[in-house]
Amino acid sequence: MSTPKKLTADEIMAKARARGQSQQPVPQTPAISDGTKIIRLRVADVDAYEGNPRTEEHADFEGLLGSIRADGISQLLTVTQRPSNPRHVLHSGGGTRLKALKILSLEEPEKFEFYDFVYKPYTTESDILAAHLAENIQRANMTFWDTAKGITKMRFEREHETGQTLSSREFEQYLKQKGLATSNQTLQLYEFSVEKLSGLGSQVQKVAREHVLRLLRPVYANLQALWLKHAGRTEDDFSVAYKHWVTLYPSLHTEYKADDLNDHLQANAAQELGYTVDELEVMISALETNPKAELADLMSPRQTAQTAHPASTATDQGLANLAATLGGGVPANSAAASSEPDSDDSEDDYTPPPPPLRTQSPNTLRVAHGLKPDGLAGSRENDAGDDVPPQEELPGVSFLDSAFQQVRGYLLEIADIAAVTSYVTDAPSMPYGYFMEIPLAGVLGDGREELPVQAWWFLANLSGQLNVSMLDTTDAYGQPVLPETGEAGFRHVMGNEDLWTLAVAESLGGESLLEVDFAFGILTDPTHPLGEAAIALVGACRSYNLAKINGGRQ
Image: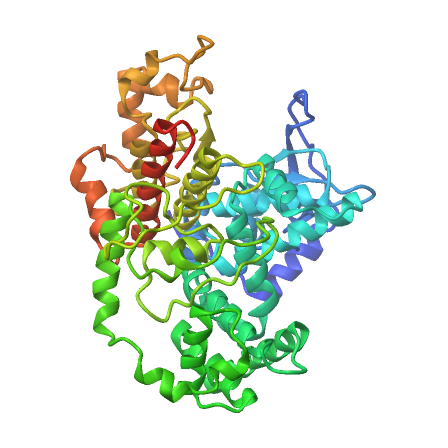
């Protein structure tokens, strides 16, 4: 069979004009209860969604084009029709496939000019945006920046439609309803990135979540804190200056690197405030130790630098902190452990975390996430034998609730990093209040080396759902602790050996990851993307269990 001739641009346009407005019968299936149906449309009459949050091109468009030419599209594209608009628009992803169809409809009109689509009735613009986000995130086709921009735009659209400002909790719940479950901490990272880093231009596509979480946002908070120590300096001034420094970076660097950007920002801040970079860094270190210090107390940076600990102690302290976390104690000499509790624990407020310029212990990681330092379990004495005062509880919040929220925070942190948040399913009677639902075939990846596969198995192991006894365990009211979520849901599949074997093979990476070595590998590998959050989650689970044993008290 000969390969179809590729048409020139002029030939394509001539064919399009020649066809004009020719019509073909448009068969359609009866609509189901929500108005969804299958309809046949001229491909040329379907538009890509102009607000598609994904901006990166398909890595192998020619390969995709050849696949569709030979075999068609295995999963029909979904369209909708806006009020008073005769044209249809993609409803939930598929922009690259539609682009391929448009090319093929001109090269082989007898086969591709008309095509079947799934039609969904129009609701709101925010629903269309949410559907595109969910589709692209599920396919792992989104950069951190595109996701951040899409989520931020979605909040704007929703507030515009309702005429009301959404709190972080309300927006978080709304996203969950749309299949875009995420944590408040991650929403803050998205908002920070869109507001502060857009000046990077095309380089912003290389910004990763970890860069913002571990480096850029914490350093922003520290630089702002030092800025405000100077008379006449305000938060608005600093925000404007910071965004200006960001816009200068691309002209000085041909490619984005997080460490280079951080150095660039600190150098500009030092110049603006009249310090050397070394002086600025030491002043920030002093400010971390005593956030309430007056500027005059920070004005001897060289003298302060002479008393700084050697770099090697950071590694020793990191090991001590790790041991303390796994053992439930408070890390020795931890600045987080000795800091005063926040006076305002509102979820919308941002507490400046410690900078990641040195080895970060799990405790400083907790603070960076807006959570309290550990101190939740085990001995109340640190390694030096000093008494550690008990952690204060939030007004109206029990210690048990606080411990559970820590578990939830680190759970969602891991899920966000690996893009498996949509499979975290609430189950109040399970040991940690959740279980992992089974994803569609192939979504997580096809092997144990895929990060989403590893995250799913790690979190499923921790939840307790892989213990077959859970299938027969009921709560105090006689209800299953592992909820039933349908024939394709975890409980039903786990209870059927054939279905479970099939789910592991097609949806969960091809093999069962129940061995101890797998979990220890994540916890002990210092380069693993989930490592720090996994260690913190294990420590939080231990603290939560201790709180339950002690009747909700520390």
